[in-house]
Image 1: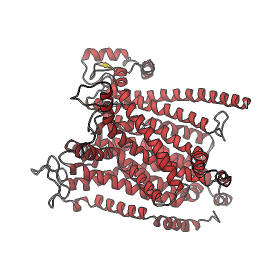
Image 2: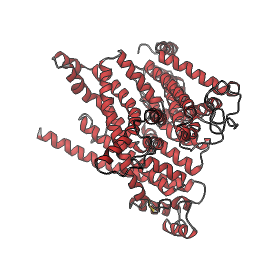
Image 3: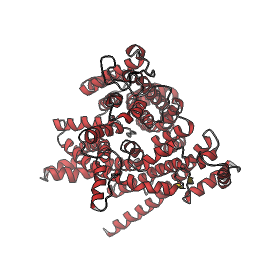
Image 4: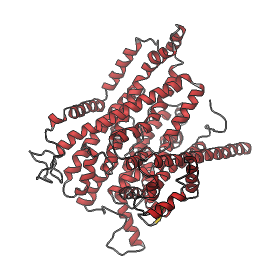
Length: 293
Length: 335
């Protein structure tokens, strides 16, 4: 690291982008992500047919009228896949953002303050890391009902500790750097140093972590729905797999297209997160999040 | 030499005692979390402790047993002591104590997971080392890409794919269960039958774990291969295979140990999907069945077992770590 000034941050961002651009997988992943977001936002336009509406044309293979076929109740699989993108992305992004925010707050406070507060917050973090995430989500869904609210809540509770640890480590190393020292010498307040000097520099790392987290959450959500523990108010990819499994011999399209959608979305997120990670630091700091499903 | 070994074993012994004590404390916390969930859930806690399908007389018995009319503190104490005694309650669905219901399913899951984890560890380490040896070659990229795929495709979809191709279309392996229902067999016949049923579920799980271990070994090897002692070994004329698999791998293996340990802790979570897809009669399947039957005592017992196995796996991982890497010593305070 050469001279560190706040102007250096912008050029560092460009360097990350240039390195990111070099990976074809990453750029393809970014396009794929954009496509998924587009489909999720404009679901009604992309697939005008109601994904929940039954029809007499049950178990039809893919055709011009039904590009992905129909399910056992005559529902359009294409509509289901398109509208399912909305559920997956909404859950994935909201859990990642909420737990990311919580993790950043806890991690930054612990790393910056140090001492007793650090010890206290880190013991708390470790405590939350113990119960296996997927099982906790499963038990909560079974005991408290499988609503989207419960799902988001329990996932945020189990996902924030990993971000907190990462951010703490980053803050610990950043707070010893020259530019923080300089800001302190100029008489900047603690909040100013933390929010204007340290956290902006930790931002790329946080973004990477959040991107990878979205993929993990999408898998957990699909997994729970696949086991029949989903919120039945909307069609989701996991639910389609749960339902389609019974017709695995006769209607491959019922599970093929939702499975493809999940895999492509998570693949895109992992490819982007992976490239960001490598662009930031070739000796990568973020381990992949454990694969939940 | 003798003195060093003595010191090592003494610090190891202290570490063992300390970490075992910690783990026990963590398990107590997990039991408390279980208790909390039961009491926070909507509805009468007696329905969760006894199951939904009991009669009023049985509920009275359970109320008295867990002291549900006493204060929450007393109830927690009663709950913790009864769980520690191995009393997880009685399953109305299976008409058996929860402990026997769960233990009857342990061998099937253990067989599945041990085969998958050992297979993927060996293959993953070899692929990872070979990828690191040829960094940026075609083989390296192929290994990297397939690892990314293995990370992204949900395990149940991997299972479905194998099921459709190898069981339904090619008919090479049976699709469901642990042994054939229509065949009265014993001895070698039975063994071969079970092995045939084992292939697809193990392959599914192994593919998932393989991606993880492969990638991690590769990254870890690349880090180690840049170090001076590797250059020194090469300069000394040590054969390349020996440099890779003995000098470098020994040092690169530590993060891999963590992941394999983590996989063991997650045995149950991993089992749920594969056992669902292949109707494998293990703990994961039991979890889903008890969910469907609202057999809460079994469900909570499994949750405790799953959490406790994470704690135990972490303990074993830490100990393995300190044996593998003499630089790590937990005896004194770090920092």
